[in-house]
Amino acid sequence: MKVLILGYGIFLLGFTLFTYLFVDLNLIYMESIYTGFANHNRELVSIIYVVFISVFFLFYFFFLRNINQKILMNLIILSVVFLFLSYPAILSYDIFNYIFTAKILVWYQENPFIVMPIEFLGDPYLSFTHAANKVALYGPSWVIMTGLPYLLGFNNFIFTLFNLKLFVVAFYFGILYLIYKLTGKTENVAYFALSPLVLIETFVSGHNDVSMMFFAILSIYFLKKEKVYLALGFLIISIFIKYATIFLIPVFVYYIFQKIKKRKINWEKIYISSALLMLIVLLLSPIREEIYPWYGIWFLTFIALTNNKKLKILGFVLSFGLMLRYVPFMYLGTHFGITPLIKILATYTPIIGFLLYLLKDFKNISKKILRNENK
Image 1 (cartoon, rainbow, N blue to C red):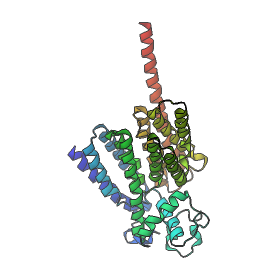
Image 2: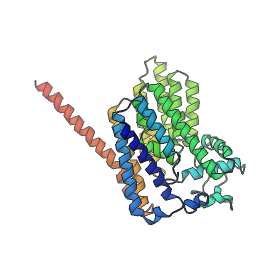
Image 3: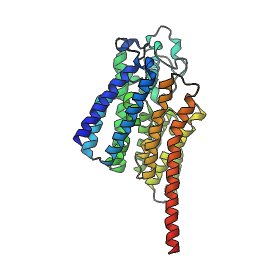
Image 4: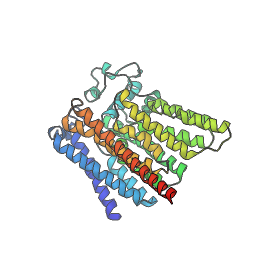
């Protein structure tokens, strides 16, 4: 196992170095390390990325089958040490948007829900901020919270960038703590903690989804302690980060109904229902725009609380498919043409495969029942 953990560390170092091949030409604060390699060698970097992701999931699969508390701590430390230092915009530019929105609030003292980044002509951040022609894309909870890491960056872009990543990572550890408090099982913590999707979208890209899910799972934690008002308060904070967790309201309705009827609460049922509700939100995402890989954090958080093997298999295979959604753009350099079709195939093929697996399992169970009846 020690050799495997060492190999995992070397793998993470390799992936972290790989991310710096994607440094943006317009990112003036890192222009000294710009190579243009990713733009000029799309086929090669696409292949390398697929290999990295495949190996990452192989490590994940093996570790889940051989996990204990000591091994988990070592793997988390390795992930923090290497992936935190990675270049955040290999797969998404959202973190730059977070920073500019915080800058509008703190530095310019304007309302980012009314004023767009593009209105601050001459600001050096405009050259690499995407969606600069839109007002704040996230809720007030998130916009207000990001003011802290921006302030602690002392108007230095690099400090602010890694402060924001550190801020996001803090919520990751908060989720791990709550999963352990709710389940008491190392394997449940490991399911979320070591997920390649979670690690890349949190430690590399710095997406705010872990903050939304931290407050969502915190609300469940206090609900379990029968502190309903506190639980609702944290759910509201979660909703006003990215709105998706509004779909968890039926869970609270179920809890209140059971309490009124003085029935015992089935927490496994609540965890599974929460996971499925967040999966539904993810699958409905194309109504608004498209399914983004980091949305996988929504259902993985609750799957980690369950003891449902089939649901965990679904989370594993769907996560792999979601991470492959990056490949078409990485290879073709466009979001149009055949790219959307390939993304759809990457996302839904694992789901179809999982449903076929369930169908086969159902047929086997049916055959056993029939054989028993014939006896």
